[in-house]
Length: 105
Image 1 (cartoon, rainbow, N blue to C red):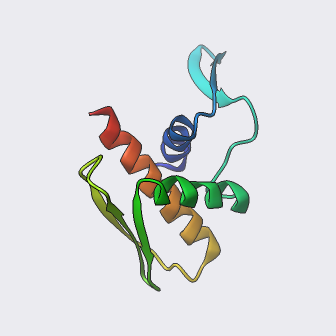
Image 2: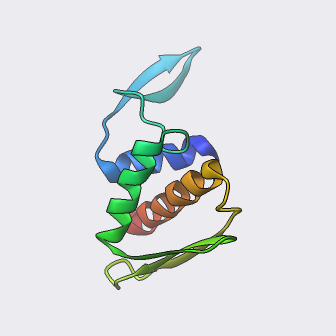
């Protein structure tokens, strides 16, 4: 998934409103505020709370794991160098995005 897709799914999961706009003849979406959990520590931490309400999180040096409490029927392991803060934020966001994608099914 691209960063934009991940951010859009996270925004949807967190209840952040998306505003449609037309740019150069194409429809795109923008956030009503600067929502970017891949680059913002506070927003990434709010994703942790969201995940912990829905299951368990296990972070190791090379991977980020989420174990569902069976409401969504999904468990995710995301391989990343968790020692790098950007990778850790992206892993959290990717996990929430995958959960949101599963929820849509």
